[in-house]
Length: 487
RNA sequence: CGGGGAGUGGCGCAGUCCGGUAGCGCAUUCGCUUUGGGAGCGAAGGGUCGCAGGUUCAAAUCCUGUCUCCCCGACCA
Image 1: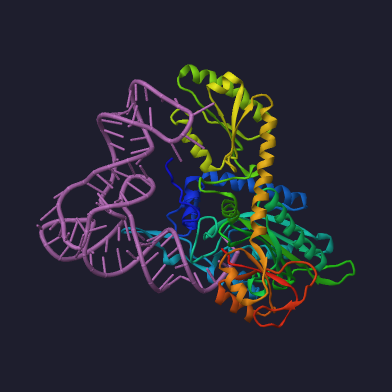
Image 2: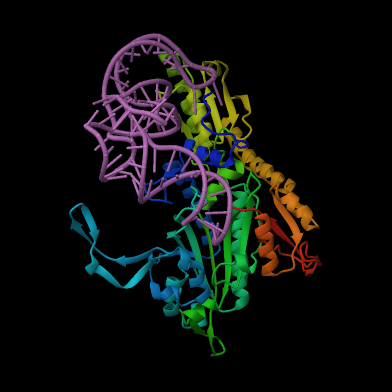
């Protein structure tokens, strides 16, 4: 078999790129830092979108759309916010081109009176609208989500994991009380956790970010963090309690039941196409992509095998009712009857693309009323009775979904440990994985650890305090926090 | 933005040191034979060698600039 994918243990970065290429998920575009998402990659994102969108609707949210362009003045209204994003904004200064000798050039006459920023996130433009929409407590809460693209001018990019333009959803909510906003923040964090674990089969840890890792303009940033196969952590989603920061910046007040005018409380939360990168790095192997059935664009592929036209005819006649039966059971199935490729090639291709279940049908199967089933995750093959294939496929897809999660869960658990001393920490962090340790809560200590070990505090877990002493300074620590090197 | 590597048909590469008019594998097209793990044979098509200058009779090759990608750092979802 011609190996087109680098082994993971040889070069993890190259492996990731090879999988993205061989699975035809995405490719580099002529524009630095931006990617072309190919149909297969986009189909996975669409499945993610659909599942998340359903969950958002079930929790009372509705979709809306706000502009791509944000007036420069909007960004400067919230001090921390502007500070956080200032260094990575694309700025539009002109509105026209003009023809010159060698093509086109910016028309200096078209300089904009006020420059426009390509949204790095939409808090400001959305809160400008919310000011007009909110007068009374009866107008609250506002529970809006937007599916959009955003741009952050990044130094170093990687397909899906960090691109200058990416697709995401951003939820922006407004509430009458702090309690309600905090509840919303945590509710959406939980939605993300559920989505990651039940659909992506990617176990995550949840918690709150430290001040240095917090979203610019947020009071608290909660996150889901997943551990990749190479032992590095990936921030997979964030949910922010924004307090009244944006309400004050945009003067969004409402008249409460008691007649008082009060600032509203806000949240925002988002996940992006980065999830596709997380999905790849959680399950895939040296043969290519491995997809959880719930997100696979094709869940079952049927590959016919034959030697001649006669066999081809009988195999396809045998395969078509199988296809129909599986399709009618609500499974996304594809019959790969391309004649210009041999079965072996198709096997390799569908493996590279992560199709969870493969059914091979050849003359022998027709003869014996069998089918050959092959699982993508374990690469196990078995000959099964043709009867009841739809139920069997369905059962296997469910099993694959849960096995993928269990495998990833076990790996994460095995690589999560607690250390007491900084010396031990320095040794352990080299091995990758999540490490719990005590931290004194100061920026200085966090920074020192980061500088010396390249590890960051991924999150402060929820739950009761478990006092201890900081592994670095020995000062009091409220609880264990989670460290890792990260993407 | 600093350090390292690399840009040559669609993809992967050789050729670059030592200038002489571009080659290999895969893929593509056609034909025949094939098809239970990336098929074989024969024929054909496809490249101003990332881009822009320069040196030279002559540049993929030497010089200068520039763009892009990959890896490692600093910054971030």
